[in-house]
Image (cartoon, rainbow, N blue to C red; front, side):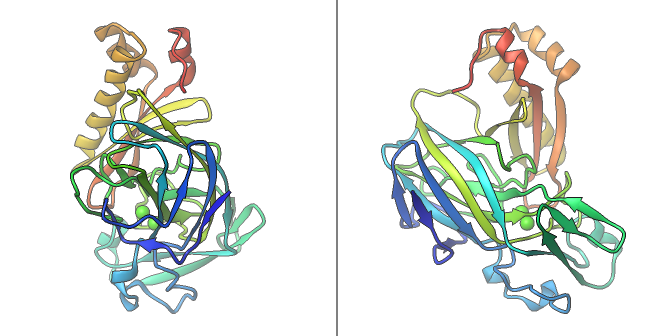
Length: 300
Ligand code: CA
Ligand code: CA
């Protein structure tokens, strides 16, 4: 098994990042990740404006997957996530949605006790670990900072990208150059205060190269649901993009008639907001996997 330690952090997704490690298709790989603050916030008297913003949103990697070439799809199974023993959540004027309504900064440290988050004296929540930043290098030598989501993945902040999920990402460059970070112990849809419960940890994955796979990426399977993920400048555009990509998949891959696909999406498809606070916004369109199975379609 390959392990990539926190010594290998990058702040952009680009083909010019040298690989931190190599693996074969089908191999298990562990990514040790730092939190989105680069580990700079450990106490409640440490605020966002006091940290070095050059060191935020680090992603661990990149991983070079042997045999992956442009046009392939990279299947990333999230097998297990281990969390550190505390997370941090911050609020600041002008940051996110709730930042529009406040005048001072605050930080909250949230301890993790076993499978529980100790939110305050009244509230404990089950942890629901998820990966905020995960992606491959974009095409054409483009460099995208790790804070921005787009077609290569990146800072999608989709709270379904957690244990038991299978994520399909595009391969745009040789080796795919997979990287990930920005873990959350828990985050609601929207990420409205600009962060989730930000936490370091270890992500156990299995990484497989798929040849001839024509899924619209990024695409996600979890808990009996199939999800097309799309990021764009506005939430409207992100919702439309996710919907039209799922429609395209239903018509081209599952074999549905055009109108039947629209009717199906409007009957059982759920558009969900992943996040509404990053430089591009992200939405997903979710449908039940059994729908595709009734048409004889099987995910690889
Ligand atoms: Ca994020
Ligand atoms: Ca985050």
